[in-house]
Length: 112
Length: 113
Image 1 (cartoon, each protein chain N blue to C red):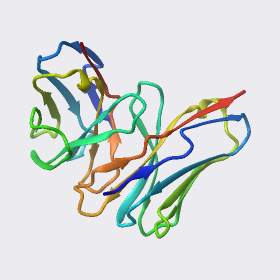
Image 2: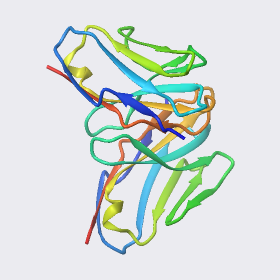
Image 3: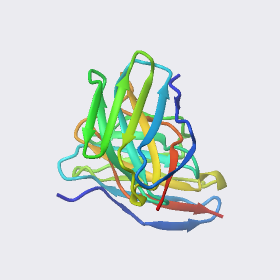
């Protein structure tokens, strides 16, 4: 059974650019949640996708958007990058919206 | 608004000593509580999940208790080893919250040989 994978591992962008992060969910999981973790803090919920629909959203502006594909993989897109967007971005998959969530290794985004 | 707190922020113990990590939450209307381990710069590894109807869960050297009425959970790690050095995070899932995890800031643990 393959776990949750994320790509890329690291990337560096400049302020104002756009970025796309990718996540492959664990086999059989139909729910993907994205979290942002700033240094020294706990992860903050961005949004969740369930069966290709956005199912819930945290306190993040509309420039954070996402997609879930028929194979339940997912993308997180961030437009107009700001310095404060520098963080570790984590995705988690689960079988259903209230079940145990399994996390990927994360993508470290640095905005200069 | 749910607040999750973990005290202390950091902890250092000698190898072999038992670890006791605390997590408190302000709203007892939770669906479940999860404990995670995070190594520096890495993702989260799920350790234990406790449903709101349960009082505790055990896995190997790990035991987690849940007292929903007082808004507390405790993670016990028996006979600590240097490999247990990591940050431990707890997270609650509230009812009617799309299953989103609300995290504490974590406790950074160092186990010295």
